[in-house]
Length: 590
Ligand code: PEP
Ligand code: MG
Image (cartoon, rainbow, N blue to C red; front, side, top):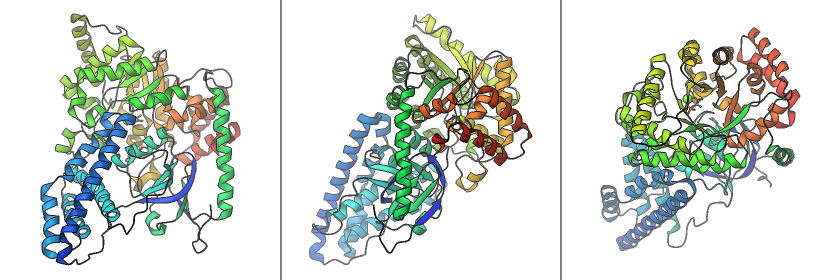
């Protein structure tokens, strides 16, 4: 791959959120709609402009339907439902009539007329404080971009008829849910965004899809022009625009090494997860959708350690029925046998807004009506989910876990709800696992401080580092402006994690970690040293983590974590851990 002679190499630093190397031609997903030229047209062309508009609308509709079908087959119906709203927007008569009026009466090209009407609509939605309506602006923009592109392609056979590059690196201001789910993985080599954070939904998704990604590249638009070649280094959070020949050669070497490592890791499939001195740690995977189950099996994870069930609540209410949930959970229970699945009850709130929360926005959603708080306030829906989980427990090893626990009363209340669901199922003669294990997510500092009390009520803990870090350090996990302050190795975080694991063990229960830090290979020595019993990571990280664990000695890691008590900064903790990781598995750190 060569770089245009007149373009200098530019290196930008962001946050690497999904490891891997990729390069290719840039496909830029516009931050905003690009304004087409305002061309005057003769009256004799009005009809052909209107015909061109109809063709573009039909083409857009066909593309969305095609995309919807593909996504429904590959990703499930819940993903595909996003596009129902897009189809409706194509039929919005207020918009369509105004576009035709401008072309007919003002004699302006239909592209410009459409852009003008839609832009006005988007701008007024963006000014509204209601987040639900503001979010609709993103959908309208998505659809409008497609319509404008199709208008260009029906531009009397001229104009920009080129298909998008065959396989490219996608660059965007941010990626919407529809962008992410509709990404054609065979075509997208990697992606980079101007905003975003390591624990954002998009980043978690990129890791689970194994697409190299870098986010929070604030200078991206300044340096990028269409036609650029872009290299993404997801390991180090670096993006290089128009890489020089020697840079490409350097990265070719790195990519080759990466392929060799992946090939080498294949040997670990089927082997137990043990530290170098034979200590067993369960290594499971996180999932959000049924479609990820094949990756869990493929990568030889020991079951699912965190099944996020929010998607039932983020879209269509129809999905929330007991039947559809029971069927879904049963499939996961069966596919993960003999290890099983930990089903986390719904954790909407924070940045995951269900329709009800869109309608009644909160001033401080991350400190608001979220997780178990919401479930305990809406016991009817909670019962539906608990009954579905219990029913699935008859088909495999199922455990249930409650998110966002901040008080003992919440755990007790949730357990009472489980008992109620059990009693009703017994009366109905419906089978379930009488010994269903119950766990608490430890992701709020108050839960850490009463961990001994909570441990007496449950069978296991799972530490949610994504939230625990944000609540300990008061750093919003999705705010890229303060991303540098989001430090999983902050001594206060390490100390609270230590407290949690010790409280679990004092009370005879096991403790896992299911946040993104579980797969951070610089932190693996901490997990071993603190005596964690389970790590639940993205499926793509399972084998790397198994290899890292196999190279660590639990006694040495214990000494390391003792030394960490003396550290006052995240950087000091990181340095000590990184040194051990570097000594033990340098090839995995690339
Ligand atoms: C966490 O908080 O670490 C976690 C695993 O849950 P979520 O990312 O869904 O909040
Ligand atoms: Mg959480």
